[in-house]
Image 1 (tube, rainbow, N blue to C red):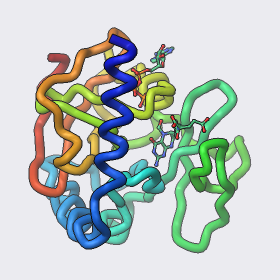
Image 2 (image 1 turned 60 degrees about the vertical axis):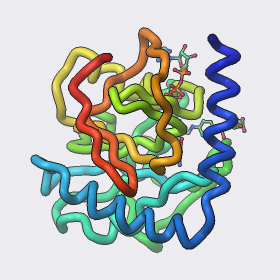
Image 3 (image 1 turned 180 degrees about the vertical axis):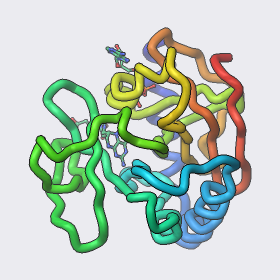
Image 4 (image 1 turned 180 degrees about the horizontal axis):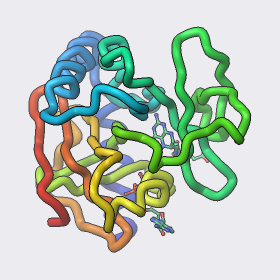
Length: 195
Ligand SMILES: Nc1nc2c(c(=O)[nH]1)N(C=O)[C@@H](CNc1ccc(C(=O)N[C@@H](CCC(=O)O)C(=O)O)cc1)CN2
Ligand SMILES: Nc1ncnc2c1ncn2[C@@H]1O[C@H](COP(=O)(O)OP(=O)(O)OP(=O)(O)O)[C@@H](O)[C@H]1O
């Protein structure tokens, strides 16, 4: 089971890295439209995205079109093994984290806790149409949003991926945090709860 998950993760990461540049640009635009069209989207507060890495579908097209009172944030790795979030605009200072991913350079005291977000977009390695998610496997998102297992939104949790990352069915782990929706360049999958 663990080996299956590791092998699947490797295969799906290779698949997303192999998507050609022209396809990625078009997909990022289409994803932005789908994210902006989600029903009941907050129009103020803080919205977490991510700095696309390892072939992930990019969020810049979405970031540029956010309502003015909804502040785009990036995740920051913290010592308690949870993510916190910092508002970030182009030009604001960045540092590279332990995985080589840029994150805002801000004092620990000014970071936002996950429960201060109105919306978070989670980068997916794989997903199924029941809303089950495969991530990078270090548990950052599962630990950070564990409180959403027994609390309603906010934050709304929306997965983002290329359609090529969809698989027939993923095994669910006890700690998996259910997503509220998944968007790809060609579909929006509403998620109704744990499968
Ligand atoms: N763009 C983006 N940002 C993100 C995540 C993500 O998946 N994508 N995260 C999602 O959790 C968090 C960072 N977690 C990560 C976990 C593992 C690896 C990773 O590349 N692991 C490598 C090598 C491990 C190492 O260098 O120590 C690997 O498994 O091959 C990257 C990010 C927060 N920021
Ligand atoms: N609430 C939690 N508390 C402590 N550890 C957790 C919690 N949630 C997950 N973990 C740990 O994190 C790891 C997550 O592994 P899993 O394969 O489910 O990751 P994933 O689905 O790729 O998700 P992620 O994107 O969060 O890494 C597991 O080893 C698990 O023990």
